[in-house]
Length: 139
Image: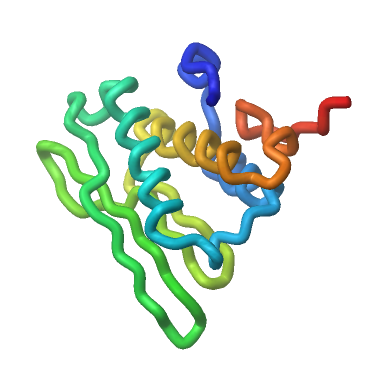
């Protein structure tokens, strides 16, 4: 598991989160409800820890839809002043939308949860650093 103080000190960009996922070697297309449910849990943990959105930000639901181009998985979030905003959208072309509504501060719990999730599921987690930035395998 990722060390909480390290996660709280770092700031990630959406591109760094996407790059961590790309480097991980995991195939999102093979994932089902259990894997995405774990991401939901990690997002909720990070949102509680961060106090985001007046400490009311939580994952609300997940949808999965098969389209002619492939499956689209959306994880939505809510707060005491909004509902059903994007947490993550996993698109069939490989693009991952990450809390598009959020500024660079509000997106941090989502990015930190994404990196933690990738590290848990990656065949070679050492290829994804705890910060989500480029990593090299340890000898």
